[in-house]
Length: 327
Ligand SMILES: [Zn+2]
Image 1 (cartoon, rainbow, N blue to C red):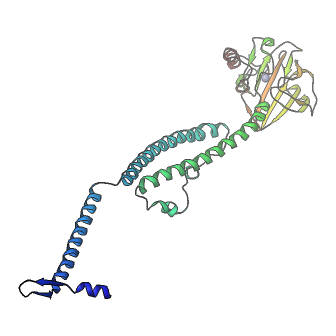
Image 2: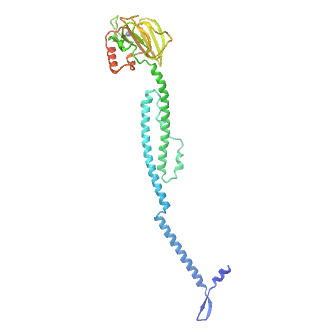
Image 3: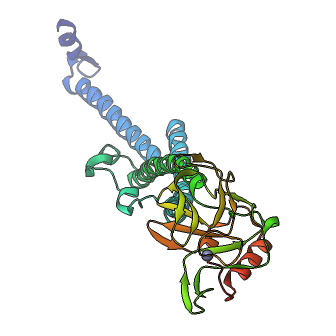
């Protein structure tokens, strides 16, 4: 304070008056002058700095900008790749729905379950403040969609695997071979459908297929199952029935001999009896029926396992001829 006061008092020698005279303003002027220069300097400096910083980035800024640009490009690439992945997944979903799930008779997974979104609209709110919010959010959304749909799809395939396993069991049981080996077959056989009755000579529905073969020829179980009938049956002579489960049953008529009894568990291809000429029959042959859920079906649909395409053609030709049945 003291010092400041003293410095404020400024004396100048006046040669005219030969006196020292106090000069107040000059000190103030100088001070103000300095201050003015200083402030002008500062203002210009700040102005230039501001102008420069507006025009040119600092090294850190330009690095960040570069990184940001790179990140944005990378996001765009990711977004495109996600589109691609979603397309591939959609393809798999369609195959799953129209082929795999159909084959295994699995219930369809509705689109609403496969492509359901996530609850809550503010799920991506925390990303809203980003400079590239739209790109980041849409990419994140796609990623979430992919993850969710993949989860549903992988569950679907798991389900099909377990269905496939039970299907394997089913496939063993469903009638799938001829009850008489091809080598043992004679040319004459008659198929399923309207045929001429061998005894009354009138058109009549033939509920099975006739395989003409020598007496004593082996008869095979056409699928895994349990023998439910092995006795004389009106019209069928010595008759054998197998329940295969899954709604399938097979009937074997006019047998000479039974090789199994009621309750026997049989495997596909196992010998169950011998061809004969018992019951209402016009010659040694096997009458074979396939019953699906209580209704007769064309047995020729159930030989797909042991026939080559040529053999199958031949069998169909023989079976479809409208010659007379042997009953
Ligand atoms: Zn018949």
